[in-house]
Amino acid sequence: MPALDTLAARLTIHLDAAVLWHHRPAYAELVHRAHREGLAGASVFHGVTGFGAGDPEARHPGRVPHLGDHGPCMVIIVDEERRLRSFLPCVADVLGETAAVATLDRVRIHVPDRPG
Image (tube, rainbow, N blue to C red; front, top):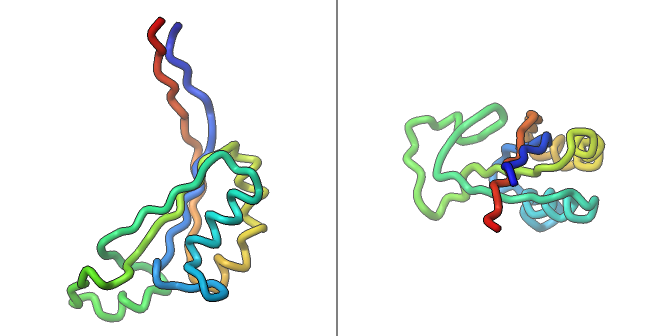
């Protein structure tokens, strides 16, 4: 059986891992809402260092981060494009209050051949 590629979309939300939303990490709230909406999958990736618009660290570019710093993170959610576009209004409150930046791009999900 040949490999199959499926069209999908990826929503990537960039934010500071230290930002809280109602006493819990904002990234955890985003994953919770994605799960509640029944989206296909969500993952959080933590970075070591970074900067961007609205980032207080950008005011101190020479500062060397320590392992105890929270740093940047990304919430990546993959599903159908129409479902992700419908999800964005559901998280507009979190995005607006945390200076998070969301990007949406089309992707192909590759399902490899299965032996047998």
